[in-house]
Length: 253
Image (tube, rainbow, N blue to C red; front, top):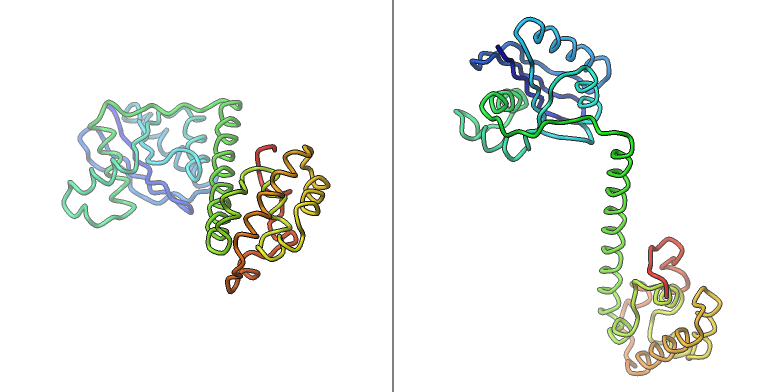
């Protein structure tokens, strides 16, 4: 005889449902997301396993808020499988009253799906290196998304008040960010002139003279082509370090 258990995962607490091989309920209750409560739930599942046979535990979330629960279940030797949340929602909607979501209903649905399906992925406890690699990849993905969002916003602001400058300055490069950190509006770029702008770039980590001069010339040319100062330019794109280059991931010049 086999037994199925389903955990509906949440931030503050999980919901556990246990059924036998005929789908009859053996247990259905809340499990707080704390070591003490999870220890009690693991002991309960081990007791059920000792009485009825192997317990297979279904989880609708892996990692994150399910990390502690998953680790403690696997450390106790319980067999765990993953049932994605989308599959849970579809299976629940196929039952009477399934359009009304609830934690007990989802936990029961997970247990039933564990009983009915043999294609669910078995969950293993990852080693330390795998876990660290996943965390690093996740952190890098977050940084890339944030940098992309900042770049898109800066391009949008530039296009709104100084489209010529947006065309000649690459805000993903170090030299472009250095320039925009000090010179933004057409008026201040015209006042500074190419020589002063190039000297400023050279003093602030733009090592190549040709790169600094070419960018300064292009920025001044764009500024001279736009003699109209749009209302709100200074407020929307303030200069003098309002776009800090040291905190922005950028590719080298």
